Length: 269
Image (cartoon, rainbow, N blue to C red; front, top):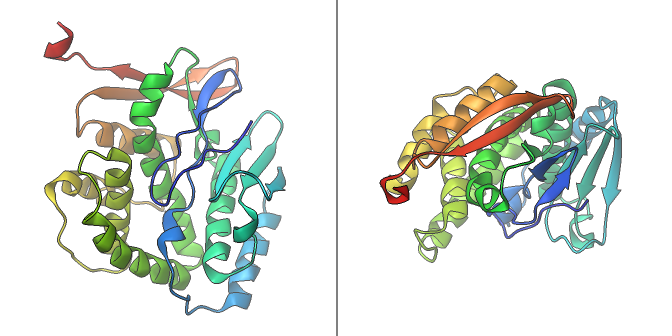
């Protein structure tokens, strides 16, 4: 298995297969947009990371010098291993990379304590690759809403600083991005929603992202469960009204997989 990869804010396109299902590994921590130095207590941040890591029961395997150029994770509930991937240039323990690594550990913690779907999105085996490619950015946006909720609770100062830096960069990137880029659209909607929630600040949001932002803000990111993840994902998918999803228990893997169905469209007739 290999991690998914992609540019900052985009959901990675590499698909993972395993556990009798098709899955997409978590995308990189979008906070790679940040270039400013974090004004945080690095010693305390490292302590939080160590405490979070020591709380994990599954083994953590770190992969450096891979072809990946961003953080990503795949938690395998069968082997009880968390696979965390990052390139050599991100292995240096800078402030931004420390928060990025903590983000992956939060995925791992939630995969162990809440549900495996927080360590990698798992679909039913019959789900086509084309459907996964069309919806994975929505699933991962919903997933990250909750994972970042845990990050914000653990290290609020660092998270808020990076979030502030992200929004400044987003405005610059926004001018150069196509409106048809759904990955960027949902990734940026996530950051705008976090900006409103954690920084208590309003900012102009175009119509293409406003619905997603309102949906995200309607659900508490620190009340984490599979049911909440399913609900949020379904509501985000409802924006375009093309696909529906439901978490259904799979006896082969021993936990719920996401079943995605394409809604009827007049164009299908």
